[in-house]
Image (cartoon, rainbow, N blue to C red):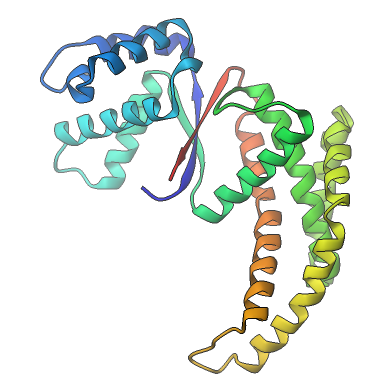
Length: 268
């Protein structure tokens, strides 16, 4: 499994009424037989009944894997894409509604970098099972932080007037957050203040890399010097960190009308 981040909405009523009886059911491909470890099986069930947040991330991956292999066993001939859709439907019926994902290593790591900075700023860890409000607060911060980075890049890196429409959309997204509470924007600006000099330096350094790319654009094999490799790393880090903005906007939209727990599963 590649490094990805999967998001699920948890319906506790369905978990109680549908998932727990299914996990307890007997049969040749029962969950208990699938796990094999009776202590783990007992712990998962007890936590599902008492407090779902006590389960570990690996427990949820195990349940997901069981749903998948059970569906594959039942429908051996259907294509993978159809099987994935079937598994999602089965899991949603049992209280775990898959609704979004960050599909590759780089944006996943940028998401977590911003999350770690946010957690340090508020002196609180956002668990992989969080309330909708906890996740939404973080997404407000992420949108403000990455949004300001995008505005910075459009102004200093891309220098393209055609990006004005994008700038307006970003400013509107931040303004909408500020109408409710400007705390997250202030926090993002405060953290960015400590990093601005580094980002400005990165943009200035990237000009040398841009010139090198122009000079070697027709060459089949190009080797970067140690200096240009470091510039490329810094440039990529900045661009990808800003790019996480659009994942944040999408996630916030997806949870707008939901009240409950959100599950984030991080595959490595």
